[in-house]
Length: 196
Image 1 (cartoon, helix red, strand yellow):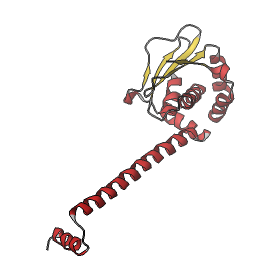
Image 2 (tube, helix red, strand yellow):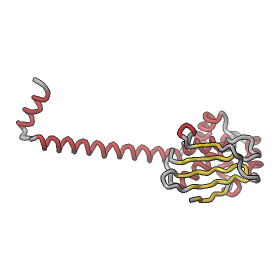
Image 3 (cartoon, rainbow, N blue to C red):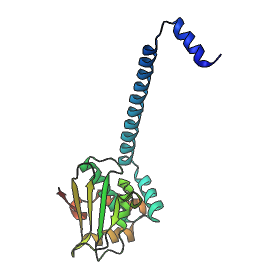
Image 4 (spheres, rainbow, N blue to C red):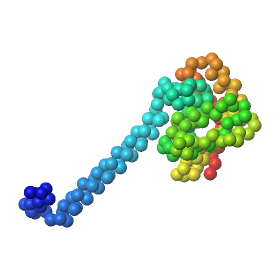
């Protein structure tokens, strides 16, 4: 006998009609969909919490793997990226980043740090390094926009920050560079403007 035949006999014995089966099936499907949605929300929340609770050594390792080494510029990018996510209350992969490297900067390494912290990548068309340089007197500028709200933050790294960043690169270990950047005063490393 076919399975449908057994189901029909079972339903008859239990006095179920088709509408009761449909209602039961819809309830199971609805519960599954709600559970699946809750699981996805939990996974996203956990992922966001994990991004902000990476250990310093994990950030250093991520920077080393992605960039090929861990210098103070990467650490500064991580600090800016985490700061932007907190200020914008954003999830990973929801921020668009445009980085303008200053004429005095040896490379746009800060952009790699921002990418690591926000998971905004060029492949997702979320991170761009502009071909134009940042204005004179700056080491770099990062414009970070929340795609949902349109709110944007502009981080300006002053040219004066380079001396301290380069000194940390010469005189400290990778982990010490991370700690130095994270513990430095915000004013010595960047200023933030809210742009709508």
